Length: 63
Image (cartoon, rainbow, N blue to C red; front, side, top):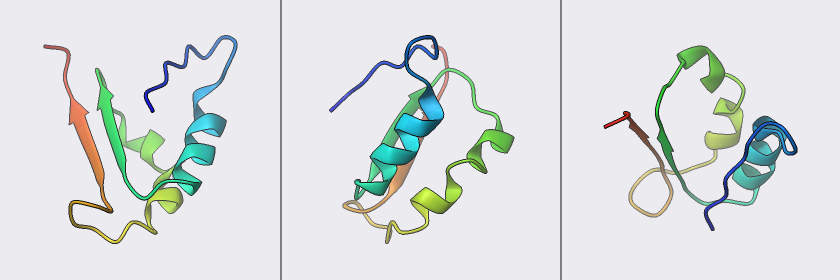
């Protein structure tokens, strides 16, 4: 289910980690991406097996 997190009332990292623990795959769409931030969630994505049904997809861009 899509969620919008504003980092004011709800903070992204704890919600993202909780969601990834209960997920079999993840799809992200972001305007900007900093690789240092990936370290905060990489262990939560390691359990994905790969393939179409158990993967992490990342779409980056503002257009």
